[in-house]
Each structure stands twice: as structure tokens, then as C-alpha cells.
Length: 372
Ligand code: SF4
Image 1: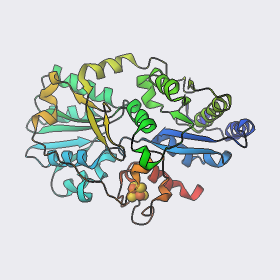
Image 2: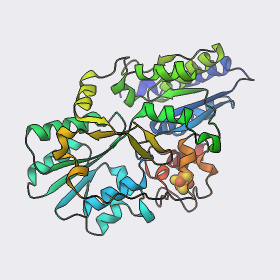
Image 3: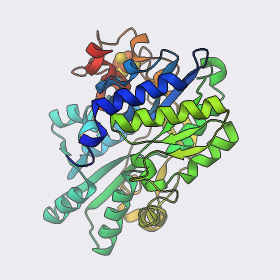
Image 4: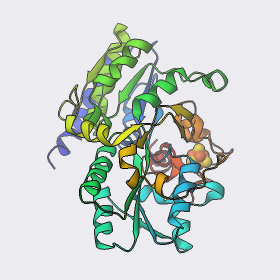
């Protein structure tokens, strides 16, 4: 398959790994955070960590949109789904994320709520057009990658004067999360994550470009290499990071040039800017409240904003104390450090969101642990 097979060639992978082994200093330390859950899965699925020297360590970051959804947002969406005349739609992974006392959208569906799994907000628009008697609410989650599609759906609904299409926005932003990880005051109690470099997200960067990472590289003296999801992409990016660390550089480099540019996707950025504004504060699962780290719908589109149009009881929901997702999402623990991993918590019966999502670090460890 074009753009896939040529980036999975085992012979080239072995050559790249040999090159990395030859440049990595035996006494060096290379703790590389892969921000994005897609990279975590690529690393474990293809066994890339096994090809590299032991002092190159992957630290798993919070770039899994489902993993960072707090229980309170899940509870809000459950309360929306249970309202008279409402059909609540969202992406498949979100349905099983546990909220308060383990309740999920899937359990609300079992209790009679009309909850549907969709692939895009455009499907929700179609549902609204075909079912004018129902209030269709799209529970919008994801990083900068999915926000443009939500923005386009809102603009379409406004243009078509659809009166039964609404959006419950939980879109979050990558740069704020990286900054929080690097300077959060909680690190005094949790301990510093000691990250020597970042593998930058691929899909997010296709939208926002490589420019927003220049701040981190310069301000925090950490190199960033934006990379794709295929094994050769990741290995090449690891080599680029090792070289930067050896040379004491902290630059933003782009390995994923076939998709990412410095400026990103301007029309997508404009659609997001037209519809959304920054929330002053947003609670992330595991990371806690982070200022200006999420998107809310602008006042001009209040007719479509489910938070404006429907009563939603908002109350803080405590996270499961035994779940170590918080420390995992900060790069401070590995899934195998959690006492529940693979015992009480499995993909079939997830207790925390890192086990629910196909991009979650716990799910990656569980699904591929046979080849670790
Ligand atoms: S194994 Fe389950 S309970 Fe433990 S950190 Fe992962 S998701 Fe949370």
C-alpha cells in the first residue's frame, strides 16, 4: 500500500536502528516523550524499543484524546444523553470511558439513552437533517486534529439554519499540555519527568504546523522532532533527536515533511478560529486544571452550544484513586507500575481511560506485552 509499505521495510528499520546505536553515546541519557498515543502504539506494535539501546527510553505522554477526558465531562454527556428527545453521538472510543462510579455512555445506552457511535460530525449533521423531531448532540472530543471538522459542522449547521443540531465541545490543545508537563507546580510532589526530547505529534502538526513547538524548544531547551506513525518515521525521528541531544541543540525538526509544514493547514486553522475561543480553564484527566488548554464555542454560535442550550449539572467527579493514569499521562510512571494493570483493569473491563482507548498507553502495553 502506497505511503504505508515503504515505511515498514524491516531491512531499512534494522539499518536505521544500527545507525542510532552507533551515534547514541553509551554514557548518554535519552528520555524521549512521545506525546501522541499513536506513536506509543507504533513503538509497541512494531517492537521498536527492542531495536534500540537501553539508554534510549520512551516516556509516554498525554496525547490520547480519550485518555485525558475527565470523568466530569463524561458525566455531563451522560446527563445530556438521558434528556427527553436527545440523541447523543460521538466517536466509538468515547463510549466506554468511565465516569462517576464507572458509569459510561455505553451503560447509559443500556439504560435506554439514545447514544450513537459515529465517525465524524458530518454523520451527526446528516442524522439531524433526517430526524428533525430529535435533538442531535455531537459530543466533540480530540486535539487540534478533530477540531476543524467540528468547526465545519457548526458552520454548516449555522448556514443551513438547523435547529436540532448541537455540539458539546471537549476539544483540547497540545501546546498547553506540553507546557503544563514541563512546568506544572504539581511536579514538586510528583517529581520531574526528566524529558530530554519530544517526538512531536503527526496529525495535530498537520493542522497547527511545526511553528508552535519552537517556543518549547527555545524556552525549555528541549529538542522536538515531528514524526509520522510508521515504524521508519519513528526510528528516523529517534535518530534525529539523539543527534540533537549529543550536540546540545534544542531545535524543532520535521521528519514528517510529506504531511507537515511549518505553517500548517491555514483553512482548517481559520475554521477553528471562526467558531471556537479558548476556555479559561479546563480539567484534564490526570493532569488537572490547565489554563487556556481547551476550546469552547463562541457566543455567536450559542444556539448550537449544548452547554448553553441544555441544563447540565456540573459537579466535580473524583478520579479512581487506584488508577495511575495521572502519573502515566505525565510520563512519571509506566502502565506496568499500576497494581491494577492486567488484573482488575483490562481492555475488556477498563478502570481508567488509558486502558479504554486504542491510543492509551495501558492498552498498548496490554495488547503488545507479549513482544515487550
Ligand atoms: S492499568 Fe487501568 S487502572 Fe491502572 S493506570 Fe492503566 S487505566 Fe488506570
